[in-house]
View 1 (cartoon, rainbow, N blue to C red):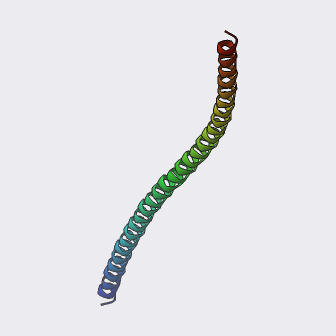
View 2: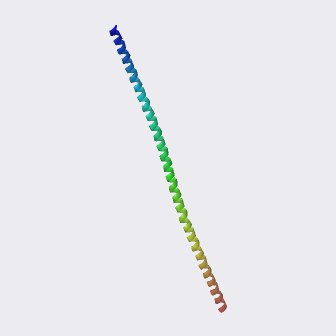
Length: 109
């Protein structure tokens, strides 16, 4: 009878060890799945962050370029306006001089 009990005990221990092994495999598989899902979420978050960072840098560059462009064009327009004023002034002076010269020529003739 003692031998039969030892066999039953040995079988029960074997079953317990097999169940323990299966639980460990399931646990390991679940942990690996959780790690894989976490890594996928992290990769997605990193990708989204990088896209947002690139968009921010691009927008900042465009704003800086536009600011510089407007600043340079403003200076150009101011310079052009000054040049046109000088040209008009010179043109009026020449026109008046020519008009006076023309009037003096007709009077003396």
